[in-house]
Image (tube, rainbow, N blue to C red):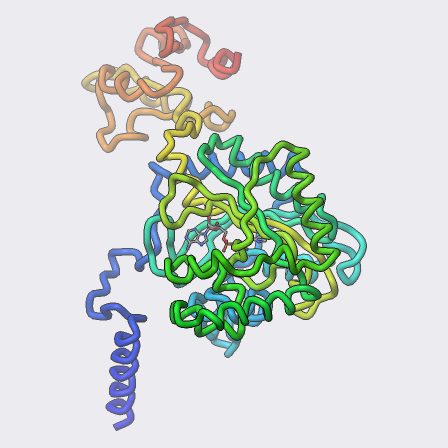
Length: 457
Ligand code: HAM
């Protein structure tokens, strides 16, 4: 009886979820495939990701930022309070679950709230958040239940950079400059930096009211989503992409006339700093971003080659985030760049990821038709020795299911490497290795023990 009731409830649950599109087709689930919106980064692409991360690590180090690793799930409250409960992220995009201990946890939809939480928990900015700056960066997967499309995934990767503890506009300029420098080093073209100020708790309430009145006077032309949240957050109507809202938002009162003295001065300094560093940027009074924590500066870097999901990077200042999660006052400014989109744009633009890393050395055993099995043994020893000395090496059988291939077949495999180390009966007899430069075709014989020193020179 209880089982029957349980089954009935489950069916009802499934039907309800199906109706709302949450469960698209339970009966179609194929466990040999990744869930919708989630993908594998295969070896053909992953070396490009490693390259992007390497560049990010270099730039952040040059700007004085240290890497940190954060958990992929946090208390749900961190995001409801930190990111804001009128945001799309909190309203409808979080992967929230209850763990076996009954706690509500959420897969991180972004990294900023977690970064601030970690800085507070470990006193990285001094006692109670006061005292010293903490410049941190991290990278990793984020999770949002969004409608998948080109450049938009449910699990995506961000490079996240945060400067905590510094209230002045110089930090905003540094963070924007860091993101621009990262894209320059990666060779991204056709980018645009768009900057705005979204005010602070002093000036924003008044601007919200002005905006609310403006949009209310044109409410007949707004989409349902904007209408639904007009009262709670009229600023969001400013960046609605629907054509009907967009033309109304174009004529909306400008934030610049409503910034308080401090926000206006801060914004002037940010603009002056960007100009001083020769960063071309466009001002956009409609840029408000989809997270509630922003104060003063908000910015995005847009790509002309991405279609609808054209932001490769977004960020800004969030001076009240720490307080909203129960911490002390801790100003902060940062950005997150979408790795999936960066790699996509680089591929589209034919950017260089540098050379695909490949075996520097291919060790070839001359043992056609099993004529010299000792050569294979020596090749195995040499391959291992080179690897332990930090030289990338491959051998027959390591890259092909057909082990014991002919000399010719092995030389063909060696083509991608810089050197071939050839060991045959003649070399074995004299304890030598034939070292062939595969770029120039030049070949010399060196003692078996000296291969690595020759390769290194
Ligand atoms: P965000 O604008 O939500 O900001 O995301 C930053 C970047 O992550 C976007 O510009 C985009 O490149 C990438 N991204 C976002 N959602 C997706 C998705 N579904 N699929 C693929 N890529 C995506 C933040 O997350 C803030 N935490 C940024 C920040 C840091 N603000 C201050 N500090």
